[in-house]
Amino acid sequence: MGGGKKKGSRGAQALSSTVRFDRRALWTLNAVPKKSVYGETLRPFNGREHRRWDPNRSKLAAAMLRTRRDPGLLLPEQGTTILYLGAGHGTSVSHLYDHLCGQQNRMNGRLVCVDLAPRCLRDLTFMAAARPGLVPVLGDARKHAEWGVLLPRRVNWLFQDVAQAGQVDIFIRACERFLMPDGLGLLSLKAASERWTGDGEAALFAGVESALMEAGYNLEESIELTGFEDNHRLFVVRKPR
Ligand SMILES: C[S@@+](CC[C@H](N)C(=O)[O-])C[C@H]1O[C@@H](n2cnc3c(N)ncnc32)[C@H](O)[C@@H]1O
Image (cartoon, rainbow, N blue to C red; front, side, top):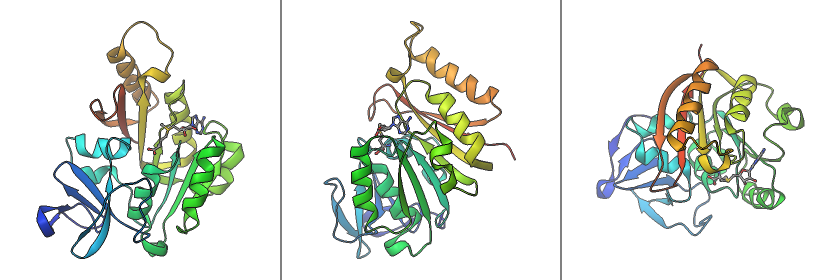
């Protein structure tokens, strides 16, 4: 994170040098000026163009608006290497890039994003052309042998949003292999993707919390996303040192 909170122009609050809070919305400093990625609004703060980060299209943005803690705690450190599993068409990835790398990757970050859908990879590859440091990977989050070579060192921020059955096991295995001690893992979990046991969503989410803690992770927060993304929750864990 880049510095403490500051009041900027027109009441927007800076979470870092690249991310702003404006009442109910988030904004990131556009790494590719004049370009909108998914039709989002562009607007200047202090003369610098920002993109509106839509919480209805990004579970990370929704979690940042819902967290009871400082939303900046959910972001990776600028200029580091991060791993994103289930990148989709790159909505959240594009904003993470703004924060992690900046224009022409002046911060020297690296964002490895994995998705198994060729259509998603096509969009991510297009996005990467103007964003050095963005590394799209066509692969299965469960099959580390296919793409793990791209991460010779462990990362200190790992995000997963694969919306398929067995999300917790996939996440725990990925954290075991790729997350460094004291690193932050964020699991976006879609209840409807899991096999229905008949016990209800609350029981399912409680089971996820238990599984994460039994695997040895410290559960920092469990963030309800209903309203932005129904039947979703974001679990934030810290790997023990
Ligand atoms: C909900 S979408 C991701 C949206 C994206 N995280 C965002 O915020 O813009 C889920 C994605 O996970 C991908 N996916 C599902 N199972 C996967 C797996 N085993 N490995 C990699 N990607 C997977 C799907 O292809 C889909 O693009």
